[in-house]
Length: 264
Image 1: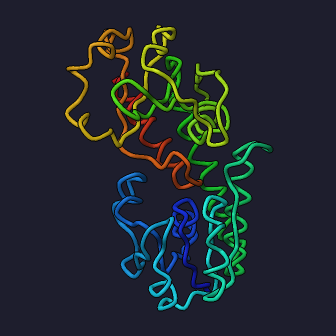
Image 2: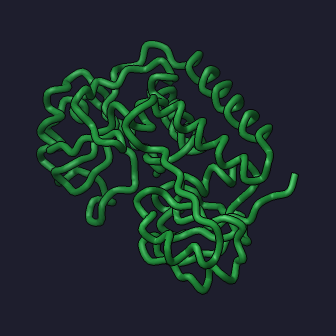
């Protein structure tokens, strides 16, 4: 199959293309992508093309892409980028059909670029098989709250419409956060709101904000939470919380390892 040379500003698109063995030739903000997605290794010929909000058009043009792929957030750039190559917007995170279906749709759409739908089918089947295997190992787990710190007193708490919720459901686990969420699948909450969930284990997804890297020992409110006092805290390395199927697998793997280690 002929591969398509793609430049993208969208990290979800990028990780999915890499998983489909058609990595982008250009990607925006690679160091931030690596920090937020935990994607230490990228194919070495992927070029950094600048900021997601303000990419370097000269660098993009040097890559001579067949396609430029944007998320809706950056479609306003399409007019200036269409002089280089055809621009396509791909929406994964929007209210509507279940997120898991949208993740599969995005995977198929990206496979179409190189005419290799078999790669999409293989990836989707491999992910489903892996999640089933992990589910079989995870019995009798506590209910979960999945959070990311914004600052010492405020969090994103992930629920309906989130990647983390979709994975939790497929692992046969329970997410106790039932509050309304945005199209990205999270609510913004104050730390004290977690006091209401005294039975839950709290899953903290990195990266932590600047100033919190050394932990939470000085955060009195955090120390007061039942989950902290009863050692029901799970800390996970970075996972791109608005990612595609590769991020879903990464979250499933890290969460399963952490929960099984607590049992062992």
